[in-house]
Image (cartoon, rainbow, N blue to C red; front, side, top):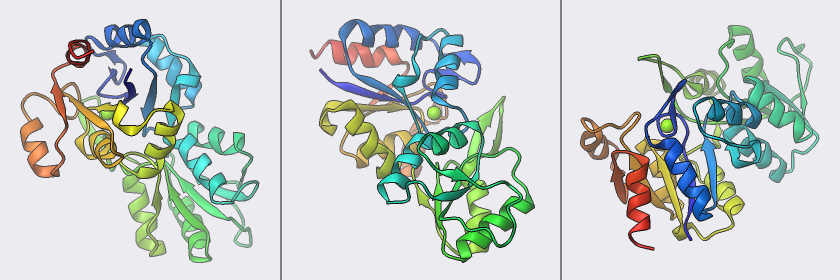
Length: 268
Ligand SMILES: [Mg+2]
């Protein structure tokens, strides 16, 4: 019985719009008892908000079925022995909640120069500023870890491309002259946690998504099976060029998610 790591935006919904067959696919997974996780690089939403958004687009979901790059970042920092320490967070509600729930103390945005931080943890922050950049760089230059929730440098939003967490990270990296530890897809860090949560060997898990560089690369590198869906960043017109450009080849290419269900159903 294979399990599934499912990307969200471009795979199960597109912004606020449902994607055809996505709700059918989740229904099929539930009826057949396939283990799965909603696995997202988006650090801005809490698991509760992700589940609510899924419901809005027609897919019943519970927060416990969601695993975000923010939760993975908090787990990673705990595993690195930073439990209970004070950190500087550049991010939105999802990241702040994940860090606080894991027991980290968050410094204020206008932390005084003498403040100490064990790490700078950064995700998408649509209120990013020169002041936050300066504070982050100061801490990292003094030896704080630099942890990045996800490397996505551009996000499709209402038909245009907007700067993602990776673009903010580039400014911090440039000024601190320190590369971040990247948590989200395609990093093995989030993949390791996600595979462990499913409790299956990687070869029994399908990584599913619309992004070759993150969803599919992460899955392939983790030893999972992989299915690219042509409903988001990749579509019927561009996917061959994207495969050539990224050097990442998915095991399966599907026009929509029920093609994946049919592929698996016909083989079980
Ligand atoms: Mg996506």
